[in-house]
Amino acid sequence: MMTIKSVKPAIFALALMLASCDGSVYYSEYKDINEKGWAVSDSACFDVQVDDTTRLFDLLIEVRNHVDYSYSNLFLFVNTTFPDGSVSRDTMELPLADPSGAWLGKHSGRYVDSRYRLRGQPVRFPMTGNYHFAIANGMRDEAVEGIAHVGFLVEYANAK
Image (tube, rainbow, N blue to C red):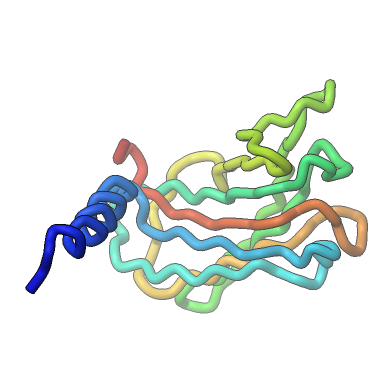
């Protein structure tokens, strides 16, 4: 028999889940980056199963950096492997701070969270199947310190 005390945590958990649901998110995953540095040879990889080729999607990269990150930007190489095996490569420069050194993203404690759109505009996936996105550090250093997490999100465009 359930008591009111045992129902309250379940109701709270359900309310929290419903409040955190955003109908615009199709895929969301984050990868931790080695605290000793993000080596050029280490990619953050994300696999997205696509079943809809009719809708537009925003492809977003999120970066969480420490406030002691040494640079004002971050270069990334993004390789996309399509379901048919073909590959496209994008190079991105992500501005993390303005010329005065002020962080551009959302600053919280020791971290700054920034979000960037891959390819600049919404995209329509050309075929169904698994898309593999590999995001690599594109800086000149062999390993870049100060990047904590890299995330990849696919959202329905104009769903908000």
